[in-house]
Image (cartoon, rainbow, N blue to C red; front, side):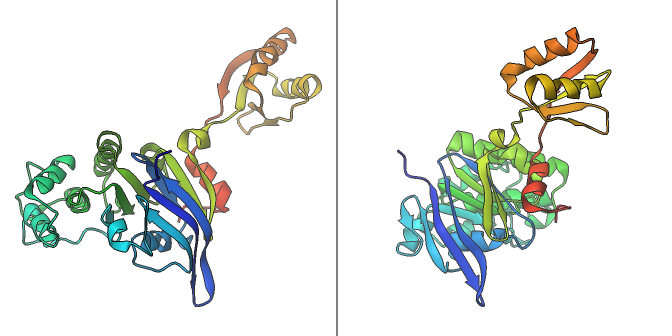
Length: 304
């Protein structure tokens, strides 16, 4: 089995005797995009700061490409590019000069590496313009290029779409997905934009009060075995489900009948509805959303 790009095991963090992160574990594979979701104060930023060495864990281990953050920090971080608190750019310099300055701090960053990063984020035509005339979306692209010039295996991005308009968010999403699928870069991305995480990520970790309450593929999180029937008499349909199939069901405010069923049984249920004289108008799978799941798992009434 391939070594995980990122492996977090039994990670905990206490501050002033208060446990902020409570024994969490998760992994990230090559070319995978992992969304890290949580309300304000849930522990997202604390976790990300530990992943890049800005904060020391109270317990547990973090390894990147097989290198321990604690025992082999330099080698571990050589595989990482990150944007934790927004891109730090000099407005009076061009985007390219900003990248050259950062690259000069490392003997391993070549002109070819900078040009490659610029191409990856789609900034080749504007890279020599002054940063002060860049839009927010363009600045975010340069920040992403800063994280890429070291040719990392892992990108760690904390709220990277803050301040972007819908077009900028869409463009950023396409860049991230391209980096994962075409360049094989693994991406850990923290965001409050739940709908965007749903579109961008392969997998999602939901953290609540310092505990990971769900870690699963987005497709699995959103799969549903609930069926919605529009019937002329939903009360009679509810009675049929109970008496003939021993199924619990609910009638919604829209006067639709909803029940969680085995899909193999659906044809028999529909047939019995019709032979019992019910008018079957529509049958559909109930669609789940990541936002609804997030709210149910974290007991949040609103997205913070």
